[in-house]
Image (cartoon, rainbow, N blue to C red; front, top):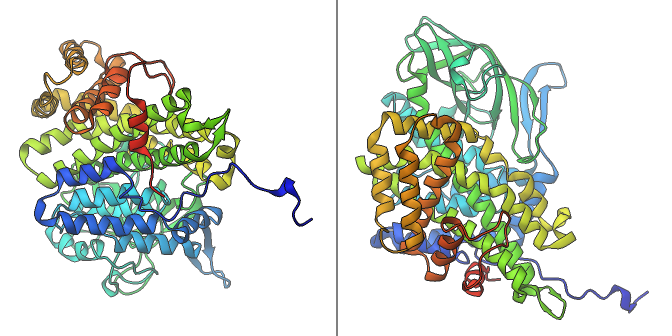
Length: 545
């Protein structure tokens, strides 16, 4: 009945839409400004603001919802029984992927401040829809691996760094842009890629092989090419597998099924069979891990960036909701206990963003010192930031109450996505063991990290004490594997603390050091100690809408 008062909607926040996702993120904006040369800063800010406005628009947010509501569908055969192995995507997927490519999210390699601007854009675009960021990440990360073979790099790099999304299966030479995937994981090996059993048989043409085997996880199977590992006569080797052969014929690439995943549902992850599949060697035969390791490092950084993006969006939604929702006589954001929760979430988000952008800046620098820093800092950051993502998104959803449990709010999609980056590119134990490997084999990596941390020496007594505790952990490496997670956690926290003490507002650095380094905090979010300026921390995290 018209005018029925029971249908009057009150006390519901407006949708968080129509805003600049980049410009509203103060921690991200400041990190970009800190790590970008003055002569290109205006260009970079303008580029990222344009992407941020797109990400915050109602249209693009609807694309993200549609891409997840209508997941990809596998077609193994056409109507006549011919094997085609194609995956159909909703149009929203293609729109998102096209926008990501045109925004430069596959090209950190040819532009000034390329890694910082691309990292910030990746963090922004993840907040729209994380699934399409998988092929963007792999395409970006394939470039350093291909550079092991200058001829291959000259052929493929212009396509991978192109700003054109050229969909459809055609010979790569006919396309204005190309995307890459990768296939390393096998059923019997998982992260132990040296246990791979896919075989590579040399062909008559130098550098070409026929592959036979099964890949347990191959994301984005409609990509134009893939980097894969297989056992050649000299040992584990990296290969480039094109989806379509130069003559237009389909390379044998048999998609057995698509994975039914917890999250990341818009992105197709497949099991594939190679059956005489044509491939070109990348790098030296028998040195596959060495060849592909730079790709792994780049995708691990993207795991940290992706988790930072998910956390930022979860915090933005929680702060926005609580800034409008009223309960118990006032706004939720003004209630001391809710303010404590929101501030705690905001600290975690800002620390993740700040560390991830620092790593991107190290890639841009490229000096020997910064490369050594990355060797230890990337696995530590990947371990810790991705571990913090799941509990944060769950807590943020709870800030919305029952509304946060409803699909329309968008929070359930963030929650489902939140564990992914901790698993992808090596789960937590793999990252922790990689840190131990770097400590034992590359002393320059520890020196570079300690130099970075030491730049904040004397600025906060809690940070100084935490650094001393880290030294104690490092001094006793007897039986260290069993406590590797503890060591890596401490390393990541002191890295974050050092950055925040130097660059964040005093209220943010104070709260972080008191709770994360000083130990004055409980086991869950919302247990920050008294005496901190939590209102300022929350206000800093508020998205402008």
